[in-house]
Amino acid sequence: MGWLKNMVMKMLKIQPAPENRIITITEPLSYGTNVLRNRLWYRGDPSELEQFAMQTASDNVSGARFWAASASQNLRIRKIHSGLPAMIAGTLSDIVIADMDGIELQPVEVSDNWQAIAEDNGFDKLLGESITDTLVAGDGAFKITVDPDVSEYPIIEFYSGEQVSYNRQRGRLKEVLFYTDYRHRDKDYRLEETFGQGYVRSKLLSADGKEVPLATVPETAHLQPEVTYEGKWIMAVPMQFYKSSKWTGRGKSLYDSKNDEFDALDEVISQWVDAIRAGRVQKYIPEDMIPRSTETGELLKPNPFDNQFIKLGTALAEDAKGQITTVQPAILYEAFVESYSSALDMCLQGIMSPATLGIDLKKTDNAEAQREKEKATLYTRGKLIETLNQVVPRLVDTVLKVYDTMRNRDAGEYEASVKFGEYASPSFDSVVETVGKARTFGVMSIERSVEELYGDSWTDEEKAEEVKRLKDEQGLLDVKEPAINRDKPPGEEDEDDNPEADDE
Image (cartoon, rainbow, N blue to C red; front, top):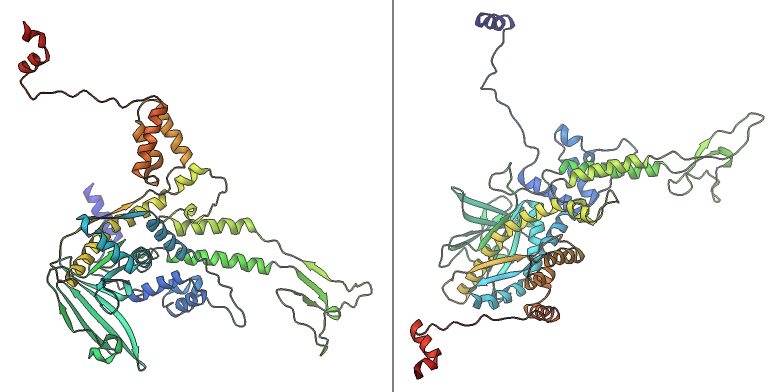
């Protein structure tokens, strides 16, 4: 059959695909512009979204999006933003921070120092804001600085992705660069701070990228070009939840894969509201019956929100009646609701459940079905907590090392751990039913049942009193096992215990 195959190949003249074909693809947005777009999604201002979309619509895909659409001459498009991106990032941050029970430190003696530093910096609020910024921008970094004029403790700040960059060597972090913009005497300047292992370098750049003295801007005049300290550790801690597939070494925003979905949801909502406006009652009024201005006698123009009407010519027929005709078109609400539900599902798919945001699309789910829907939120929450379990201990360790350096002490080694509670746990009634069955079958002790019922909501003393009360009510006594004395050899113990044997 080989001859037949060769003959077919010759007849069809099949040429192999060239391997050296060059395909040129132009990225529509740079990293900084992409972060700006995500920021605008989070800000949620429709006017800003429209301006950004129109100015960056450089390709056919971008130009076909809803926010990049422009109206025809003398017409307007009502564009409404859902506000969903801000709700997603804010809710995820609130869920994680609300479940954070605390930070445990080793050695325990430094816990008071960390507590004072955390209160001085408002650490819980700062951590919540940093989680939101990281979800929006893709990554960021904590910067630890010392300024005795501001605080006697280390100062913790968070810089989001557009204000920070990283220098890595063979995948290992070597430097973190922080950027702060200033404006002085109508000129723009950028402060570039390089945090490396054992040093901090600062330089001020003008708008054209040339280095200028730090004293040029009053806010940076007190900085030194270079500050060194003992130790091979960096006074900065990066944070990112997802890895970007477009920009090496950078994080991925929660919005990067949902840009088109957010655009589609806003289009559905805007179209829905536009249909409601277009579905208002229309009044067809003969021209001689149109209201006139009391001052000039001119015909009043229709207003879409109150006295909307359409002018008709005066009928000249003998049997014509000058009457007002009212017409209201039908609005397909069911179709809009289905479109809204589908677009909303696409926006939240892989991120969180609608139930987490208080959205019940089916209106018939019971409590168990609602908890099942929370699994998507649990997966995302688990990813955030996994990252925080690595970042927060490193941050606490670094801050305490800076505090030691401020006190002219050798930087110590500190081990911190973060404890998080449970999310979307069963109701108390369900827990009571489950624990009650376990006690009935004799597979759970009283101590364990009290722990399962009350957990962290009760102190150890309260749980111990509850265990004692239950045992007293149920007639269960704590019976201690008899002690066995083996201080002497078995033979001598038997002789001492039997005095009659000595008398004989």
